[in-house]
Length: 211
Length: 215
Image: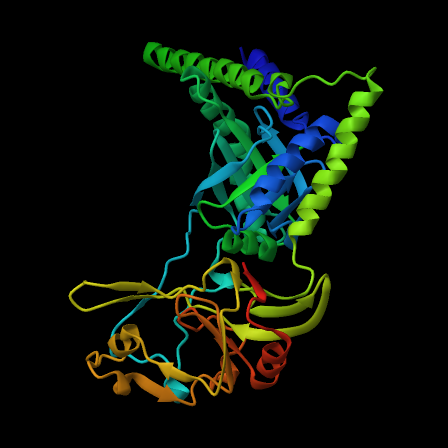
């Protein structure tokens, strides 16, 4: 019995190790054509939009075809099919420690010489580990590369979530015949993650592109 | 002893069930490429068709590039509180600014509520004003715990917006500040505060219609 469990655990470990990432290859002209047509539709509107380039390993925030900011992706891993090449919307941003807006109490002036206290929501207050729920059943998990002790410990917890909980979650979605795709994005720094959380507001539209 | 055996056996069955479920889940969730059905298949033999698509791609790329601003425009990074004055792809000025604090103010009695965010997206300069006078909105009085005046003259405050202001709609301005030590921090009620020297350069370079991109 113990031997069988050991074999099963080894198999599970092998599955974890072999989990593939997005491959880099040259995009096919037809796929590129679809991407450009969709991007042109986005660029014609005054709203900001994003391009998530899975092959080029970068995320860009754009307006009218102009790149406002670009973030490089350190690593990617996924469960389920690739996102469809069509305009998608960030429906919800979700974080364990979501930033909270500060409430101003009338009559308490906030700019008073030496007693000044800043009542603001800034980039540094944004979470560095969070998820975006995008339509068509896409769950996008953002995490910085773990560098400090606590982030390494938290990362162990996330490994369990990624390899045990998310495949099971996919199973429940399959049972309901609903699409499910999970993508984990690791960025080089905590600041990059915070910057994406800041820049992407709920409702922003964009494209996922893979070669 | 028997109870212990039953418990161990139940645990083993549960664990085995969990492993089976995980294996099924792994098989179903295994990363796969986009189902080809979503795109029409490409025919490698038909060169003319591929060439046509490539030509169309070039034209689409030009169309997208054609939408981006060519002349003077302003790009504002509200997270890092930085403004870029650009001409095409070239940055001609970079300034440290202050954007919206993101704070909330609720009128006592809960009738009205304000969120002090700097709006995001594409805007354009709608007005250019020298020596601007601030027409204090209702929230400014409510924030100070004062009564909102009925007389318009009581709303006017001079010298707080610096020497120049560029209006970009809905009461939002790029203007100067008395609180230069706070440049680089998110402290405003949605407007964009700029230091005197940078403000002068931005004012001179831009005209009504200059595009502003805020993210």
